[in-house]
Image 1 (tube, rainbow over the protein chains, first blue to last red):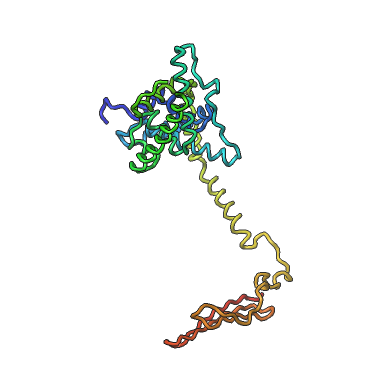
Image 2: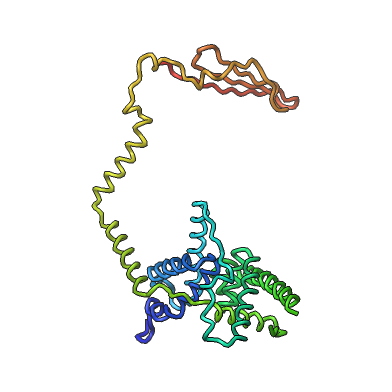
Length: 181
Length: 143
């Protein structure tokens, strides 16, 4: 390793402040519960810090961490299923989810709330795998090959799944457009 | 709501707005995460460093638990029980004869009352080749 090159562990420590909120939002979208998402975020990064130094050089950290996060979310859903409990998704009206409106203009607040409603409505219509892939693409900006790696899919499957998910999103938008006009 | 024509830009804009609308709850402090990592590492290393004799004892106990019932180490059998025929064997009813698949002409199974042996025999007559037969016998030892 070159003297100037930093280790994966150092990279993860450096990126934690930027990456952790994104991972937590991703987990909240998958699990539908902010409290469970916070616990899952901690578990994700505990696993990441334990394993990060075993990664091959040049591995991009964020897709790898999102992959761990998804596995954690699947384990939580499975455990909840075994215990007979179902995660109840929060509604958009959930007061704690909406950011402080005082910081934004009324028009921006309205647009932001509408976006929240439309996207949540679309996400609710998607199966878990497709929802995760869509979020990774549009909310977290991962490339198709990174999504394929995260989800354990081929590149072709990743493209197809995201295409199908975007169709649902567009249909939801069209409904919204029809309702808004 | 202004809807941009281009779907890709619309989707990205929607997600960006949604992110703004959402509260960003505090993430677990990095110190808590690192503390949890170090606690897990200590737990794993102390488990690995456990005395070998502890594992040897656990393996021995597991072996006893598995083998002992099969060996009847901790059970006593009365002489009457020892000579009693196996209930599984007794449940087999004598069958005089029954027909089988096309190739076989007959299959006979016999189990004399209270006998310790089971014999199955079959024979087939092939018009092209010579006839063939097979048999299976099973016997248990009386004490």
